[in-house]
Image 1 (cartoon, rainbow, N blue to C red):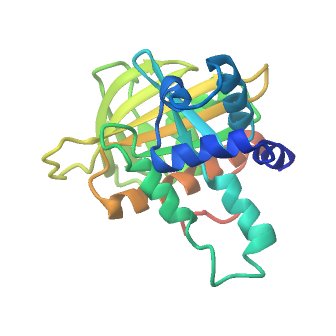
Image 2: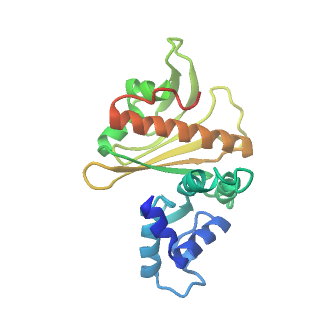
Image 3: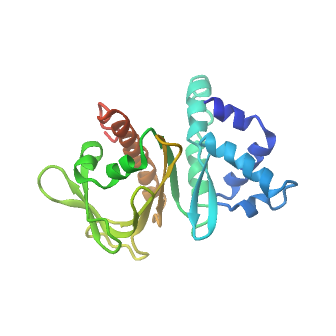
Length: 251
């Protein structure tokens, strides 16, 4: 939390967050446009915001896009504001939805978490059927080769897959991309796409960024937001402690 307050203490960094609120998913050049600062200075400010988990990044081709991550702000609200003014300031979720939908051709949901583990361990947690069953309640089954099918199977022995898709990209320990849709789902605009980006920070910490694109509407966005938050919290706990949360967060 100290990093969050340090990041927010500077007016320039607050202005950068304001710009991402208005138009989420901007490149460094876009954020620098109209500001009296060099790219190097902006990069330093963004690095502090990213270290505080207030900004998440993802790459699309050669571009690095920056996204507002309101989760730390929400934690501040709950700890120091919400308990005194519960009827007010319930706008963070709306802020997040607006920011993520600002440009339809950019990722619609981005979530970043930090896990105390190696990249190989986190990769295993995403792709190993037994491990995914332990913290997700479903087994992710595939050979994880580009072009191969994958299934999100129930663990009740029925073998039913609630989600299916195709592996788009798989770089062990670094990046996993696959399509996501119900087995009989009619999606005129095509399936949504989920991307896991793993970035080691030293030898024992991984920054995991999940991007879920091509969500159809506000309801699907709401479901994705709640679902991924729960799953990733359980994943982090399982990888770091060897066991999931005592109560499934989605229940």
